[in-house]
Length: 176
Image: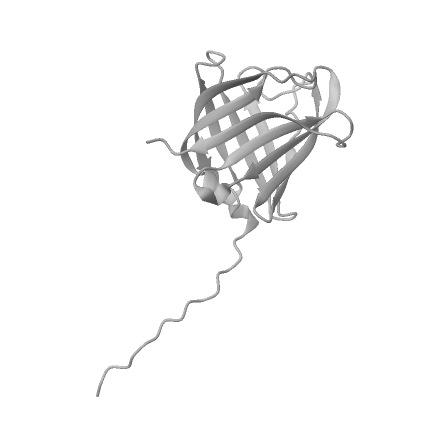
């Protein structure tokens, strides 16, 4: 008797959990930064510098973090992003911490996060903050996540979100 022939049929791809939205970012990166010299002043002068970073998952799938070390920009400056996923809301809260402010406000509390998620291949995260003493809306946008060269940008709005000024762009590539 001949052995039965098995045919393997592809199963439909399961929708990935939003808790895995940042899996594309895990590991080491070289980061090209393009940063507006002055924000919310009509400035058109940009500075360009490189940085390195490595993203790591947090235990139990609660989120991830990454480090940010500029090369030849603000000597001694280091920062990190802490991304925390809420299973209840399926949204991400992203906190920025650095050795200039500690990521803390004047009261010693953690600065407010930007909150959001991914839709149609773009991640939008928004929040409220203070910039040079005035309230601003902050938006982080992630795109090109699955190209191997993700892109992040930050924008501020000082008119309640009617207009936005992009003030920082990071283009990621894997180190050689």
